[in-house]
Image (cartoon, rainbow, N blue to C red):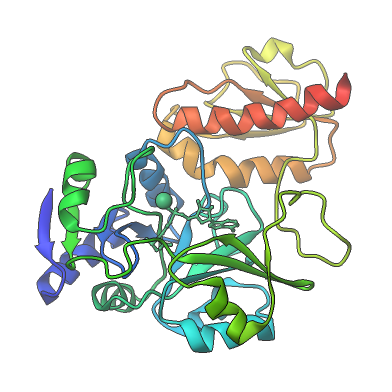
Length: 324
Ligand code: TXA
Ligand code: MG
């Protein structure tokens, strides 16, 4: 692991080379340190989750270098969002909007929305601008730890799992960005953070607390959540597949041909990281096929396998519930 001064041009160059090669890099932001990867490389994004050892997938924030990059990522940018961006970007405000198809599903953990922010830290901005592409990044802490606000925190927590940490001094805010979504019926706060509700409402009027009923949306709302609508069953062996009118999400190349009409193989060789990179987009694809049921092969619960099984179990609970 290298720890380099992020203000040095050679350090930025090294970071960019790593990002281009599909690697992950820790970098400073004004809120907390982030663990970044090329947003358009699902395999690199899978490495973020792997390094964090999270037992589940969380959607990642996409960090952009210029305000207008937003329009390449978001389907529609309401005028209230534009107003907030004019005031608070670059800075610690993350805005959730409906995503364009170019944003890989692993970045948003299968949601049809994407959280975007333009950080104000000079090293973060330089890195993103010179990389010329957005960087997906959660906070650079392993699961269960608090967010790092100094390069030395990242060294201690993740040093053995990262090729490079850029040092940009202490994060001035020291708490994460405020996360909001702008919906047709108002602005909702998803996470309180570095920008206060008072500051936001001064610009945009009343702000609502996020409702916990995300899945039951009122008519006219954007699809904020994705959960497979088809019943999903986790199976140990493909013998359990007894109908053709089904989709099959295989972990590795099956030895015998399954009955299912639609089959997706997460990783032919059974590579967990490759499987994770494909996981959400394959699941969404299979869900959209006109079948009665999705069968999913049990995934070994090592590394990212845990996070994938967590997601499958949630989906299968819904199946048990609806078929009871
Ligand atoms: O200040 C920050 O926001 C830092 C720096 C690195 O930018 N990042 C950060 O990322 O705190 P993370 O992954 O630790 O927290 C991001 C949270 C997720 O846990 C999730 O709750 C929320 O942002 N989020 C991201 N995209 C979302 C989406 N499409 N819908 C709902 N929530 C989303
Ligand atoms: Mg975090």
